[in-house]
Length: 301
Image (cartoon, rainbow, N blue to C red; front, side, top):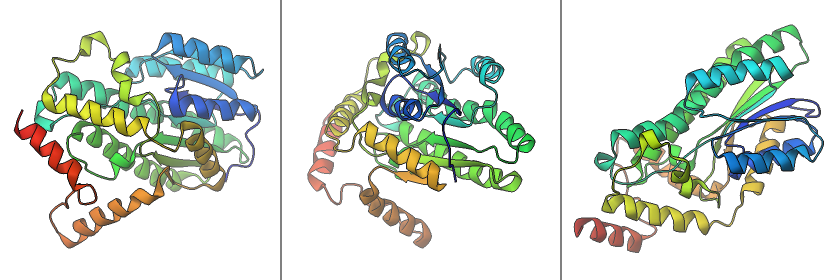
């Protein structure tokens, strides 16, 4: 259980907006050193200015979390300036939809690069430093929070590429939790599984790299984008609320963090199907009108 945050160091990816920025704001209010990472230069500069004004030390860097060499260099810089970080928030993420077979190689490389490899690099680069610090000081405490999604526990249609990336993050983080428990009680881990929360993720294509540019969108991808825009913008739980949940979970050493626990009924149904060997259930059982409209749109395309 984390008992003190003041003077500790937090590394936050995707720190210029959404959950990353809101977690950084809480961290600043608690007197922490901040390492802000993002690819959107203008938003990162704004976040750096805002958080520096609170008086806490801030290091902001434009870093592509999918780039192994860049993350290695960043980790070395962080450790040189602040020592091993106490908290790592692997939060950077992008969204993409469409029928699985219509996703291009570039689509897969972009989404998995940020959503999965970004988390892999965050864990790979910082965990050894955290463990070394814990070994050197019995009172040292640390925690890693990886942002997945309720999509990492469900398999909603027409968003498979995103589902795959987030299922991988859930599995990675569950294993990280178990691996850490083998070697220390001083470093913990949590996985954040938000549902529909108004953030900038539905517009994440604004930061898509040129070398992985999207081809002309298919009908299923256009539908997926429209559905994502509507669902995310209509969310009633906000990023600041979720960030507060994250800090509460770290303090309590709680692994699973849900923004919308009411959605767990769908997860329970999926788990029951798995155990019983039943075919996957109808994802539109509670909203058959949505399913009918989606099928008609795709079959008439």
